[in-house]
Length: 339
Image (cartoon, rainbow, N blue to C red):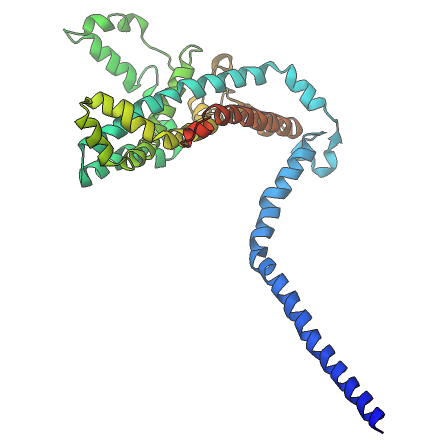
């Protein structure tokens, strides 16, 4: 009898253990699934708008496809597009223009922004500094298309204000001799000359993005301790020496950050060349054709979507290589370390 009671007791305890374990397993499963539930909206959006487009673009680069023919119009061509890119003169022309604009429109931004930011921080205080900084930042937050359209009017050969200013300067008694050539050169076709179109585009880029760099460098100079300036002044440093030997080395991380953004941004120029050349394939002799502009032409003007996708990956690799070189030579030093 006692054996029967013990066995029944053991059976009941075993059932209780099973019942206790079952909720524990469900609780553990719930804890494991709950984080995935919270991040599921991000995962869905990431798959839809990032992972799938990237995967499809790689897939598409190996196909010839006119988007107007539907998905059934895809034809597998393998590495044909990448082989054609090597001998494509328009692509090499666009890459040359892109690098030219990246350098000519990139370097002046920082050569202007660094001293201007230093003057804003060291000379102006409080609300006055904020006012000037905000004023210089306005071009950056203004629509690129609107800015390009305004400069398209300014560069006009017959009625543009730039040519009118040059004519007015040629009549000034003191400095008129420097502009004596202007009346004979009129009208200057800023956007219809292969020699002038790239400088015209570069000036617009400099005008738009210099204010952004001023804000970055102003933030950098504000982090420099006043004690360093005081110590330099005690050592007899001039204003130039304090800037060159104290302030500038302390903002190297900010310089590195700003240069990185400039490199990546300038290698992807599209709106300015597109608007200033009036959508005419980069203007005279494709002098204003950039790589992003050529990518647009191949995909949306010529309906060679597969080839355009291959060009986009070549552009991605090109930007990645340039940025990697920048990181290699300036990365650790730019972040304040020693190589």
